[in-house]
Length: 168
Picture (cartoon, helix red, strand yellow):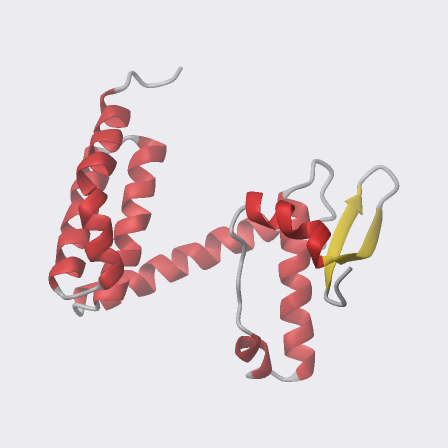
C-alpha cells in the first residue's frame, strides 16, 4: 500500500449525499487509465488566486463535473449554460487570436471546427478546420504538424459524416 491517496467523490443521487473517499492510488490507477483524460489545472492556476477564489473555483469545477455525470443534478448553478457561455467566449477569443496569426489559437480552432463537422456534418466547418490546421502547421505549431500527418484519415471520417443521410 502506498502513502499517496486519491480523493474519490461519489454523488449518491438517491440519498442526495456526497461521499468523499480517500483511496490508495494503486487502487485507482486502472480507473484513471481508462477514464477521460480529465481537466488538468496546474497548482499554479489556483495559487494565482486568493484562497477564497481558489476554493470557489475548485468547488465550481467539482459541482459542474458531478452535475455533468448525474441524472438528478445538484443544480447549485446551471453549469451547462455557464459552460456553453464560457465556451462561446473562449471560441471568440481564439477567433481573434487566429486572425492575428497565433498558431496555437489556429490549432485549437482547428480542433473545434473538426469537432463541429463530426457533430453537425457541415462542409464549411470541415473547410475551415483544414484552413486552420494548415495555417497552424505552416507557422510551426508542433501539435498541428503531428495532426497534419493524420489529416487524411480525419478528413475522410468527417467527409463520411457529411455525406451521411441526416437523422430524423
